[in-house]
Length: 234
Image (cartoon, rainbow, N blue to C red):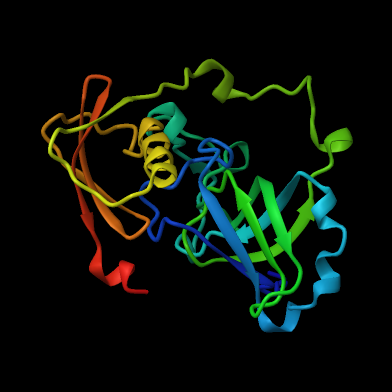
């Protein structure tokens, strides 16, 4: 089998250090932000010249926590409840022959010259903190937007959202923007689709906080938000 090497050109830094809780597609949580910092060999401001004139970009990245020696021709998409299989190439599963992800994100701003080199701020991300990036390309509406596109099995499966309630007495020091973003993440139901146990308490890490929650019927209740001293000291 022919092997082609790809250079890591940058990394994206986000508020999600673990897979659990990451939106399943880019743009689902519009205000989930990321900061793209280039590796030293690619810290040339000329490389991002003109990018500030675009509204969105494509990120081609590595599913760094999904590397496997073997691959399967079929996968179980969460959208189908985690029980039905489709072909791996008819899905966006991270478990692929090549662990490559593709995301369309909105550009907030481009800073060509900083102490870290060029830095790109984006939102609508669906990547964990420190995700390696292979390439970025501008999003071109005239060719990339297909108004007559169909979505296969995703068209027939209703996209449900949860009602999010923060229990009385839960304290936190998240600002309004982070709290709103966390609410959006939770509303998209980060649980595996086949989980339906109202007594189970789930946990996820977000912006240096451990968030504990449970789900009953269509309501997600946040039971606790604890400052993660390890993350918050970075």
